[in-house]
Length: 97
Image 1 (tube, rainbow, N blue to C red):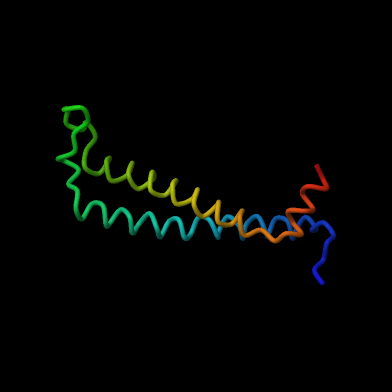
Image 2: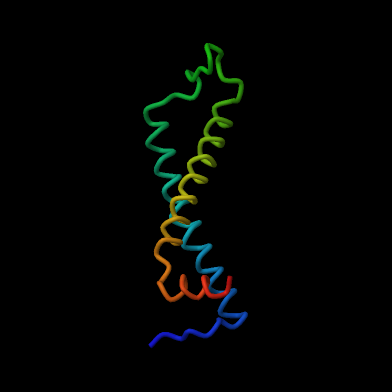
């Protein structure tokens, strides 16, 4: 049977670190893959916004796109981690509120 007691501070911190790693690492890899796929097809120097050429340099477009891809991937990984939470943890949170 699972332990229903609240975690100790060290267990809580290690679970927070574990959750951060479970979110950040896969989302980083997904952002790298998306960056490679998108910019294999799209040339940043040919991007236009409302008829105007983009002002940032190619490297700037690559950087902004990477962090945008990473943010979206982090949100997806965080949602998966949140949805995969065991029912006893969800019920425990409801009782504490």
